[in-house]
Image (cartoon, rainbow, N blue to C red; front, side):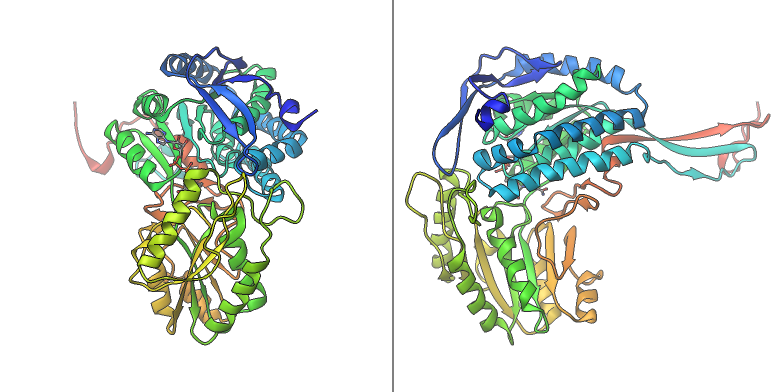
Length: 503
Ligand code: NAD
């Protein structure tokens, strides 16, 4: 039996899943292809606004029941969801690889991240803590508490077709919210398989309608969802172009948005850096996931004393990167997601040359049925406009510097603010980088690269990366509403700030 059959993905699939099963849909047929082989993996009959309306009704009804379940009991169901993911990890990880193109180790790692999110959310379900404060009035008590929000709309990007959902869904679920997931149309099968595994757990526990999935066009389903006042929170992960639009629409209805958008991440390598870890850190950051992570390393700033030797090392490592079917052992780089992505890579290379960049290694696509390109290293200069933009491909720009503060300023001089790193053995350099004068990104690392964050911390970035925070720490607060309560246990009614109103 194939991975697809084991995950129940045979035949034409529905694009709408709610209340414990598939709904009938009659939209356009969406085909999902393996980007490494060109093989058709499956087909999905997309959903439209009619199915969306039914799903909202289901999610509203489910919310009334789900919010009454004590948070730690909600956590128990998420614990079971994590167990279900563990049971299906191998198949789901392989499916991520087949549909998205990341290497198998990363496909499995992505599902592990979702399992970790479930484990984290179980603990969180007992720690949704508000604060207590001292009232200025005698015989009064003040505290704040956190309540569920309602229906959360979850919009996800293609590059983490399983984990981005989990960052949101695991936390939203323990918070008491119900949700509607609108995944990328580039990875619908992973979304359906993931939804089915989790929804089975919720349905078996008597809570169908908490998890809902809709696969439909951005112009119809996507637009309806972001305009919908019945969804108090839209959590959207994807490009800055998409986030600017979604953020504006949601703000116009005074809803909440949680935006996780594009990055333009840099690594600074000081002259005292341990190159034995800096070089692999750079290569994983730039070539891992074929440069298709929001946290992929796009720029490096090398101290001039070590620049030539680091560049030589990178050029020789780049020549050894194995490119091929990401399911095969020994492969380090799979394909880009589709032909459009390859065209974007090729057009970026033309722009790089037009703007005076020097391609040191790579810079071409590979022939064959899949969407393969070579990882590319470019000697760049600050006058090149293209280095300010995120090209979602394995292209790394190399700069040199002599003064750390100048390197930090240049690293920060882009519109995005997601991830950043420094390699150094100097306490002073690392503290400068981490200080308020240092990196302006949501993530700043020392002696590890820009990608591969752990879920225990809050994940997200500043500036055009959108400002959202997901996963660990207190990121759960985005999925709940805060209420401040003042209770009077005295026999008087004193007013705050000494105001008198004697009647
Ligand atoms: P994309 O912006 O093309 O699409 C993302 C999602 O938005 C998809 O589900 C898409 O269907 C949806 N969408 C687009 N227009 C919409 C609309 N009008 N209404 C509702 N939904 C709409 O992004 P992509 O190509 O799938 O992903 C790559 C991008 O995502 C990169 O920029 C990457 O940096 C970013 N990303 C960011 C993070 C993060 O946490 N910061 C994580 C992963 C990916």
